[in-house]
Image 1 (tube, one colour):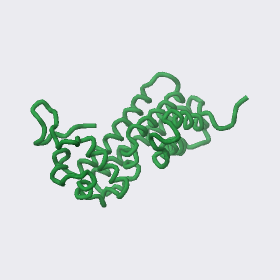
Image 2 (image 1 turned 60 degrees about the horizontal axis):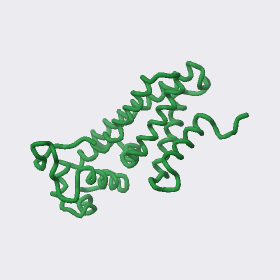
Image 3 (image 1 turned 90 degrees about the vertical axis):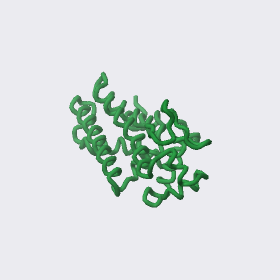
Image 4 (image 1 turned 180 degrees about the vertical axis):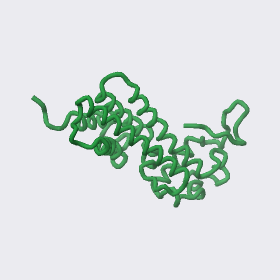
Length: 207
């Protein structure tokens, strides 16, 4: 996750901050509050209470609430953009590239679940949110393009809308934010294997 320079940074770039906390911890707790209460309803005072520190101490790590939001959304969007860039440039047929994009999106969700959840719940109430939503719509177009390419090579049915197929594929992935919990009964490996099997192989045994 990108770092923010502040008066608490040393000349070598290391951040002193407040003992017991670092920027990643502050951001993690802040994003959890954003997803629980909504960004607009979450105040810096609420964050300070959850962290057990003063509001002024938070500013040792982040300059503002909106910067917390920007960093959180970047932590979801930047790796997702990399997934689709890699898929577009990968070797293999279009269906393999599409499957790779779904698999990569799952891995980002596992690594950045709270930030991805926040991204999916945006309402566009600020410039930061609107910019993030534009980036997300660009990802939707990339997903539809991958489906179109698979249709052109004959790997996906032509009687289905590419954009609708893309929404179902990646909507299934996004649905994990509602029920998947790290350390729960379903492992990351099992979740990924099951999602890929359902989306690309179906539920009915072959042969």
